[in-house]
Image (cartoon, rainbow, N blue to C red):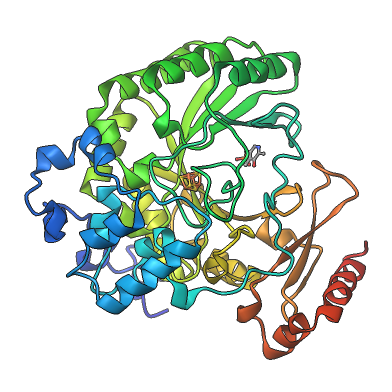
Amino acid sequence: MDSQLSVVRDDGKEGRVRPPADPATLVHRDLLGGDWWRRIPAFAEVDEATFLDHRWQMKNTITRPEKLLAAVSGLASEAFLKDAAEGFRRAPMAVRVSPYMLSLIDWERPYEDPIRRQFIPTESTRLPDHPKLTFDSLGEQGDAPVPGLTHRYPDKALFLALDTCPVYCRFCTRSYAVGPDQEMVEKVSLKASPKRWEDIFAYVASRPELEDIVISGGDSWNLRASQIETLGDRLLGIPHVRRMRFASKGPAVMPQKVLSDDDWFRALVEVVKKGRAFGKDVMLHTHFNHPNEITEITRRAMQRLFSEGVHIRNQTVLQRGVNDDAQTQVLLARRCAWVNVHPYYVYQHDLVKGVEELRTTVATALELEKQVRGSTAGFNTPTFVVDAPGGGGKRDIHSYEHYDRTTGVSVYTAPSVKPGRFFLYFDPIDALPAEGQARWADRAQHQAMIDEALAAAGA
Ligand SMILES: *Cc1c(COP(=O)(O)O)cnc(C)c1O
Ligand code: SF4
């Protein structure tokens, strides 16, 4: 291997060792710092103290497409702005982009920019949805004994505590519940209501098998400090609950909150400390998708959490043109590790309306996993999973019973979750070989492709 040198060791034997790395290649440590946001005309006068204030970030978060596009007019081309305006008109998600996110986008190359692609749709790149896509493709509502609690796995449950987020992502799996109603979508209500929470606490208390509660939504960043305390007190007070996780995209999209919302920060730290005193594990789970989302501000925020004993894991969504190449995935894993965030999962993109251009094939995930594993510590190496449509839950991407790369149909089983059932995932059609695309173009072939895959899987 050319990265290793042949040397004669002290014992006289010849061996091969790595030469020292050129520090210039350790780019995962190069975090964006300074006052980069000032290159956005709307933020040209914003000083550091203001930019670090979470209240300023919240107040200046953009919720109307026209305002968003106006903020970057002069930076992005007219053609792009028109394309995005039309993209927004068709999008089934609400718009919410923080100044922090907006300032990290390279507006001179918006089509390629990995952050732009996650938040701002363009009409010209839109692809038709997969014919097998259904709303709530994960079947979270089907596995919900009480509204907003999904109890799918034996010992853990997902508590959808609220229905708002600090930003709204195009690719969100929970677009069935999160954010205000859009033209094309009727939402399910999962507001942070005391009555709904009481029903959930009662259910968790009534189920001795539940040891692990994921608090998501929506997003824990938008919980008030008093709500964090309530969730901590009530859930940690249930004897059989041993583990809790607060899930939030906040560290990736508004790390300022950790640095300046002292009430919220204290509330979270107190729940973690109380958990530790009870012998219970409380963690923060977050959602970085690209190394550009990790800046010097992130490092400071993660250090504040780490120094108080709050541990953080990261869940990434694999997206085309965002993080579907090995170099980006390796850089993301190593940069997360550099700021003490443990890479946990990389998710195959769910079947979600209006974002077919962001999905990748299962083959892509298989290849990426191969490249990432070995690039850093095993505990900082994410597991690549697919959340099996229809409620099978997360499966290791490699564990399919059958995968046809031509039709893009993969078949998974989940013996500990739904024994005896088979779950199908469908690659995006435009990424298939011509033969597969031709078969999907013919409606009469759809069921045949599924039947073939199920038969090959032994169903
Ligand atoms: C992801 C998820 C969990 C947590 O799963 P882990 O693999 O332990 O991270 C729990 N319940 C539901 C419904 C989920 O989707
Ligand atoms: S922050 Fe999470 S829950 Fe909220 S829109 Fe984004 S992906 Fe969905």
